[in-house]
Length: 479
Image 1 (cartoon, rainbow, N blue to C red):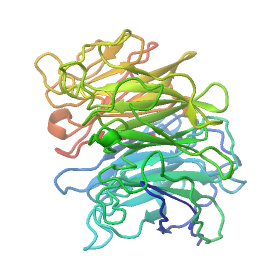
Image 2 (image 1 turned 135 degrees about the horizontal axis):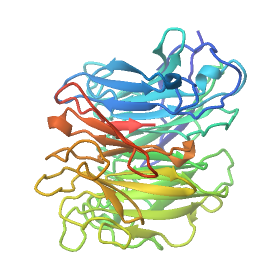
Image 3 (image 1 turned 120 degrees about the vertical axis):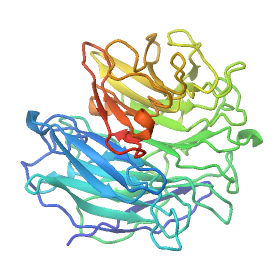
Image 4 (image 1 turned 90 degrees about the vertical axis):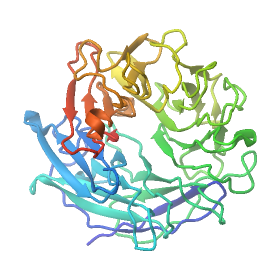
């Protein structure tokens, strides 16, 4: 049995080390050498697959449903787990050499509500799985835990760099895990992000190298309820970490995002703290903005830059409380700084659909997709009212003037009170995604549903509805 114990380090609101435990068995190769399909293609048939988180509610068990394309003969399989299992999802590729083919596309599941012991409530666990084509099921590969702490919620957010089709990258994969409830020095909910270096090596050595730090100009001490690791995104050699509770300029819940350049070069630039008080970022940090509640990184067309999307669902627009906004910033890996000025959009901005209204929560989720030669940025507004249907939800593409509800032409289903369409979004330009994944976790009184695709470029969307009342099918979608 080969066990994985490699660790790069931990990021907290003040520098600290984390000791991680994990167990699991390595898979055997089941296909030809090399990774020729995207990291989101679990069954390696050349088409991306869809994973849906079903974390349950009120103590009910959680699950993840995976919809495999299976060479044109769709196959659906479900992995069961405890309450909260499926809160976060991603895919991981850690192929290094022939024999590692089953590592090309691994499913990663966050279970932050899980208790590792009876006295460690909601400490959290993360699982990785690979698809066994011979057994026709997902097999557990690794299980990750942190040193025990009740309420840490390890696994509340996950991120890895996604791989597109034909990109054979022979290197270990890095998995980032958020623990927004982690306490530091007795200060509650400071938050922490831990990175794991996942490879096929049998070496059990533990690596305890810091990959970043927080000090000036952020803080010399932990910040209560900063909730670092509430959201995560990785692309283009960068990692973005949301801390929507961070008290920018002393304003509780104003929020901030930490962006770090991934690597081991000691001369690489230090991390960037981004907030609405950062030079070049529009707006003003205000109490309850929750800047960083959602983050998404889009790799640039040229190496060394990314586009960062930051959701602020608590942003007030005029008198519209919690209408929401999204900030779009280009980040340079060479300087770990803004490349030009950022811009902020809301539903009142030019090129946007709808109108900023109280409680829209525009920016609660952000993602990207390809449409022909264009890159589209998607934004969820799960609190959008559709007619008299409160919180029915809406999804928009930035700058196109297009938005969709479940009452829009070509979109399956019907807008209903509490559907919260757009509460979660999946898909990424990094994998070459040409369709979006849209969570509708409140569908049919929290049974939940997922919309696969939007009526863009003649794509015909499909709508999948869960089967268990209160299970919140579509709470997370991915990769």
